[in-house]
Structures are given as C-alpha cells and as structure tokens.
Amino acid sequence: MANGKKKSSAWKYLLVSLLLLGVAGGGAWYWMKRRQPALTVQTEKVRRRDLVEIVTATGKIQPVLQVKISPEVAGEIIELPVKEGQAVKKGDLLVKIRPEFYEAARRSAEATFKSSESELKTTQAELAQAEIELRRAQELFERKIVGASEFDTARTARDVRAAQSTAAGHRIENARAALRRAEEDLMKCTIYSPIEGTVAKLNSEVGERVVGTGMMAGTEIMTVADLNEMEARVEVGEVDVPLVRIAQRARMEVDSFQDRKFAGQVTQIANSAKTQTGATQEATKFEIRIRIQDKERFLPGMSVTADIETRYRTNVLTVPIQSVTTRAPGGTNAPMDRLATADREERREQLELGAGERRKTSDKPPEVVFTVMDGKAKALPVRRGISDDQHYEIVEGVTEGLEVVSGSFRAIARELETDKAVRVDNSRKDATSKAKPPGPS
Image 1 (tube, rainbow, N blue to C red):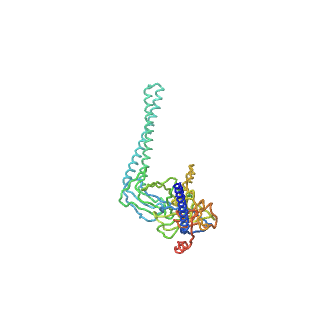
Image 2 (tube, rainbow, N blue to C red):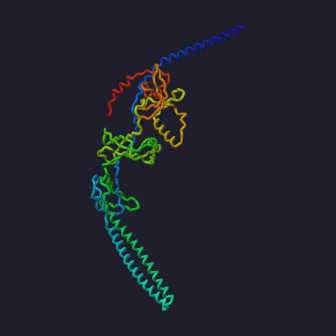
Image 3 (cartoon, rainbow, N blue to C red):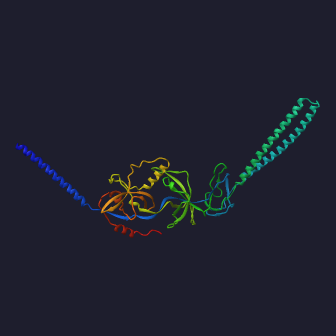
C-alpha cells in the first residue's frame, strides 16, 4: 500500500514538472519572438500615372532602298568609274565588262539570221515554181496528155516545197531570237545605276573576273543605296512580337550618336521567324523594320537599340515594379524568386489563349503587394496591367494613396509575410534618390 502511494506521487511530480517545462518553454519562445527586431522596409504611395509599355529590341541601321549590283554575264571588268562612298545618279555608268566575246557572238547570230533569211527566200521561190508546175500538170492531166502518176509527182513536189518554206520560216524566227539574245548579252556588259544614291559597298576592282547568268545571281560587285531614307532593322522575340503593330512609335539610340534619341515608326513586321541556335537553346526572332524620321549621317550597319511603344494607359493606379511579388497559397513564405519574367509568362499565356490552348493557372502563386498596418505587414492580392520600366499598372487590389512596401528587394522577394513586424524607414530611400545623379533629359 505504501509502495502504491509512492508511485502515484512520483507520477504526479513528473506530470507537474513536464507542465512547468512546457509553460516555461512556450513563454520563452513567445518573448523571443516579441523581442525579434522588426524588418526595416521602405514604402511608396499608390499614385496615378500615364504608362507606356515598351518592347526593346536591338539591330542594325540599313537603307530603306538599296540595290545589289550583280552582272548577268561573265567576263573581266575593264571599267569601274566609281568609288565606295561616291554619289551616283540614275543612269550613271557603274561597270563595264570586256565585250569582245559577246560582240563575236552577236556577229555570229546576225550571220545566222541573214542566212536564214536567204534560205527562206530560196524556199519561197522553189514553192512558187512548184505551184506553177502543179498547175501545168493539172491542165495536162485534165486534157489526158499526161497520166495520173505525173500529176501526183507534181503535187507531191509542191507539198514538199511548202513544208520546206514553213521550216525555213521557223528557222528564221529561231535565228532572230538568238540575235536578240546576243544583243542583250552585249548590252549587259555595261551596267548603269538603277537608282540615285551612294555606292555603299564596293567589292570588285578593275581586272577582276566576275560570273553571272540570267538564271541566278552573279558576283556581287557593289551595293548602291539611298542614304537619305534609313530604317532600323531590329529583332523581337516571339513573346513580344504580338504586341507590335504597324505605325507604332519608337525611340531609338544609335551607338555612334551618344546621348541622342531618334524618333521612328514601325513600317514592317516579318511574317516568318529567324531561328538562332545558341549554346543552350534556340531563340526565335522576328524582324521589325522602323523608319527613322530624323535626318542624320547614318551609315549602313550602325548598331541601334529601339524602344517600341506598344500599349498606352492614362491616369491609372501604379506601384513600383519591385513592389509586386508572389506568395504561395496559404500565407506561407516559400523561398521563391519574385516573378522576374512575369510579363513574358503573361504574354505567352495570351498567345496560347489566342490559339485555343487555355493554360491551367490554379497552381500559379498569386501576385501580391505588401502594405503596413499597425507595424505589421499585410499582403494584398492584386491584378496587374501593363508596365513601363519603373511601374506596374494595378487593375484591382489597391486604392489611390495607399502606402505599399517598395524596398528592400530582399525583403519583398523573400522575407516579408503577413503579420510580420516591420519598421518603415524612408530616410534611406530619400538619401539614395538624392545621391543618384539626374539622368539625361
């Protein structure tokens, strides 16, 4: 009996000890959590702005009109009176190829043509004689002076002469075509400028042999271009190209003209893609042509960066780009990167929707912005619109004047969560903005 009481007292003592340890541990955890330093953040108010969405692309400047000069006959260049960079007018002499071979060919074709003419006249005379003999044989046959055999012989001779005359006519047409071709080949030995412009590139010299036929492009001797009208030929990715439209405005920076921007307008969008195979993956690009409206001494091949203005919004609610992040459902703060490629994913979805392939988005983390209420962070789900290089349009989820967290990037991307203690310190943001030098106007 005494042993039973001792065991009961020991169990009670053990339970009380465990309870006290649990209370002490929970209290320590609670006080440690309360004593954690608040996360320092910066905030910015939701404001109304005008946004212009930009698609940036790089490429080269090229003339709107340029002609590659290639011969249609082969031979040696004996005259090349132009130099690279020289201005030429339409009809000016550009190249002359040695014509002796083609002059001989023309003379041969001319002789053949004249021979064919003589042959035609001969066969026509023989046909006339055969007609006379046939009429005489017919008269004698009707008067029964000659037999049927002589009449048939005369008629056959007339038919043979007629066929020979027809064949001679075809031969003369063939000779006439050969003569015309020989004359054209001789004319092609001399090449004149088809446009008014500038010799942008010169690849050949006097004395070099060039090749060329009428069936395919020959040696590229030079390029003549009109440098008064220039365009930027840039390559846009397959995700961005659906946003580009004819007549959209663009701002361009040319490496050769620093600190200057040039205005332009989209004039052409390629219908077929250019596939570029890189070290890791293929890149699909579409060529966009932008007519440069400003006049400057542009040269073909200059590097250019174009910002194409694709979509516009006026007086819309905006937040800084870095304020929009993602969080896994349920309020957990899983270690994930902020959607740095959110715009590209959204545009890819638009392409798929247009093709009838609706993507399941149930597993896509919702996009949120964080605000500060009573010293704690609160996540607000939002829906984005377009963006420029600094701000997102917010279609729903925020109101004008609301303070949203705009920094730091690490805090927004990984550390912030609902009900986390935060401390707003905008002095760091102000100091950074004051120290930042003003950009070019």
